[in-house]
Image (cartoon, rainbow, N blue to C red):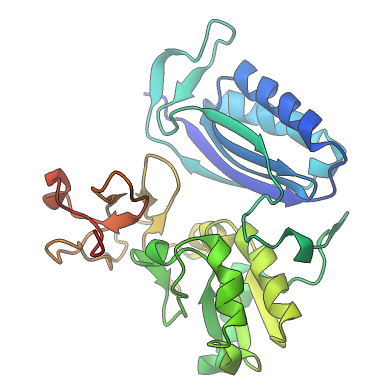
Length: 305
C-alpha cells in the first residue's frame, strides 16, 4: 500500500509580491493533489503538505525554481494513508488523508509571534538570529559546557507535554504570540548570560525566537537547525530528546523509534500516553493529552471548562 509523504518546510527571504506567490502556490498544489497549509509573507514561506511521493517531489522542484525559495529547508516524514481516488478530476494524484484540505494564505508573518516590525530579513535569511547548530554540534556544546547549557522550548506548552529535551525550560505559553510578553516579563532574565539553545518542531519558530531573545540582551543564543525533526533523524531516541513529537496534522504525534519514551500523562486518568485530542468544550481550541480509553469520553476538557 502506498504511503503519502509529508513535508515540513520554510525559508526566510524577501518576497516582492506575496499575493501573486499565493496564487501560484495554490494552483501548483491543486494540480498535484497536495493538501496542507501554506503561509506566505513578505519575509518568506512556511508550509506543511502531504501527498504522493512523485507529486511532492514535483512541488519541491517547481517551488525551488523561484529564486527566493531556492534554499527551502525541508523535512520529510511518512503520512497515514492516501485517498482511494485522485484529489480532483484535474489531477491524477491522490490526496493524503492527513490533511482535510488545502489552505494557502498571505499573512504579516509566516510564523505568528505578533511582532512583524521586529523581524529583519535579507537574502541570507533572518538578521540577528541565534547561532545555528547541527544536532551533533548541540552534543558538542553540552559536552563542553555541561549543565551550564539551557534548552529553551520554542513551542506552545502543550506540545512539550508529550516530548521535550531533558531539563528544558518550557515557557507557559498557549500560542506563539505569547512569547514576546513572556520574554518581556523578566522571568527569564537570569538566563541572559548562559548558553541558551532554542528548539522547535522544524526550526522556523526558533529563527524568530532567537532573534527576539538576542534583541532583548540574551548574550549567547543558539538555535537547533532543522528543529526536533532533524535531531530525531540524526539521533532517534538515543540522544537528549525524550518522548514523542507533536505535529499539526491528523497524525497528532510521531515517535522517532518504536522504543520512544512515553512521558505524557492523560489529563483524565493519569495513564502514560502520547495521544493528543481537542478539549471537549466546543468553544475551546486547547489540545489535551488523553489516553485511548478516556478518548471516548465527552467530559475530557480543560480544568477551566
